[in-house]
Amino acid sequence: MNITRWGARLSGDRRRSVPAARMQDRIDTFSLREVLAHAPALIAVTRGPAHELAYVNEAYREVFGPRRLGLPARDILPELADHGLLALMDQVYRTGRGRTVRARRVDHHGAAYPGMPESERRHGYYTFVCTPVRADSVGGQEGGDGKRRSSVRGVLVFAVDVTDQVQATDRLRESERRHRQAAVTLQRSLLPQRLEDPDDLRVAARYLPGGADAAVGGDWYDVITLGAGRTALVIGDVMGRGVRAAAVMGQLRTAVRAYARLDLPPHEVLQLLDGLAMEIDATQIATCVYAVHDPSEGVLTYSTAGHLPPLVRDPAGQVHRLDDALGPPLGTGGSWPHTSGSVPLEPGSTVVFYTDGLVERRGEDIDRGIDDLAGALDEAAGTPDAVRDRLVEHMRLPVEHDDDVALLVLQLPRHEGRAATLFRTASLDLLGGHEVAARARAFTSGVLASWQVGEELRESGVLAVSEFVANALTHGAAPMRLRLRRTDRRLIVEVSDADDHVPRRRRAAADDENGRGVAIVATIASSWGSRLTATGKTVWCEFLL
Image (cartoon, rainbow, N blue to C red; front, side, top):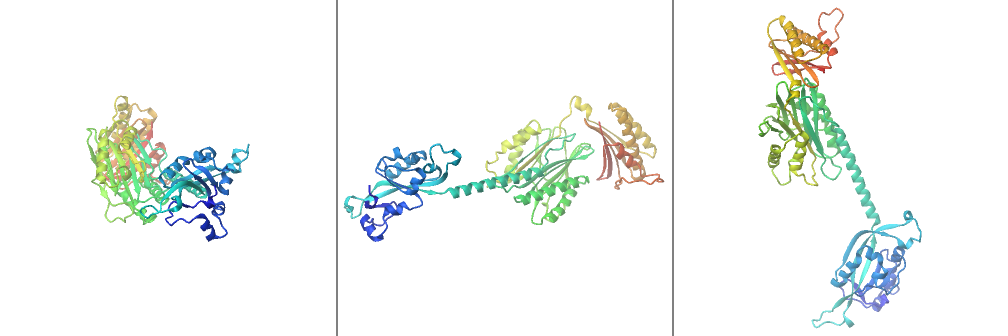
């Protein structure tokens, strides 16, 4: 078939078709065959419903090899079948509408030779377009309504090389994947690699990065043992996303751990963090909950800086929010002071700290999400890990959730059986004058003997009590109180009084009569410290069992 004598046009050209001979006259030196032969696209033209091959250009032959004209495409164009184009060509011929197949990988068989190693075979990516070739009705005559008729006589297939675009897209996706992996690695490295394991609490946590890009968020959590059995629990969220938010989060988390060692009330820790957040980046705002569990008092003291309220399930199964100690977010400049609240925490209680990514959904009130989480906590049972997994499963996070999720679950277990004999508490009010020191030593010796503490440790405990009580009698104020606690891991000694001047360890001179008590305790104990209380101070030390 001589395509130069085929009065043809592509679908979509609404102008009156020009006979091939007249078209040749107009362009003088260029025939349609010559134009298609030098086109950079791969071009093949078929005719009839059997798609007999009428023409292929040089670019097509270079990729797929030589082809015999006049034979059905199904027999001599296997590449069209391999890429699912024959069925599309049938549709194009039948309906007269073009079809497109995007970015298919094509092996360059034209440049291959028998036995060529697979590593040397070339390939590329092509977008194939199948469009109908129309010709005017017989003789180009008009119909009865005066309009010229046209019919589909064949199909033109052309393929554009999009290898560069596909490779660029692949490189971009790989770069985004690496950036996201690096960002998530940074985020996870800033979170605790392993949660601290308090004596009196059982904890579990989970962090779920949101979104599919590299813009991770600034959610974090932490568990910090403070000494004397007290534990600080923290959860926070830096507003915004990206490496900058993660970096600010890392600085705040480090600062929280440093401030926690001061053993300050929760609201004072948040006020210190607020000032630090302003110094780190005045454009970044963060929310945070800081809570401290004191097993001696049986309470959880907490303060909130713009964060969602924690949820508590008491031993009776009632769930309620801790929303009575709210304050402004960190980084707002302390427009009003933070406050601390407290709630009794009895054995069998569960507390849940979380970030907004767990409960917030587009188009829904966030209170509805919190209520949904509270309902799931009401029904969740088992260990903290089981409760954590149940809550995440119940909240049904969207597959493409774009906000990070941090979740921290703690339980205060009931001690039964042998565990009940390991967790013990005893206290003594120190009333009177200097004779209370001897009474305190006798009380300590008797209690530790009843707890079956070894003789060496019992002597160390008595010595620590003697030094703490002597220090309280000299520098403290009434009322004073001695408390002894034993866990499955350590012995804790605490002495409280009404004076707010905390002791400091110092080097005593050779001729000093005082100033050695704290140094002695620091030498024999595994750790020691002091903290201010609402009525004065408490000095404590620990001995590992």
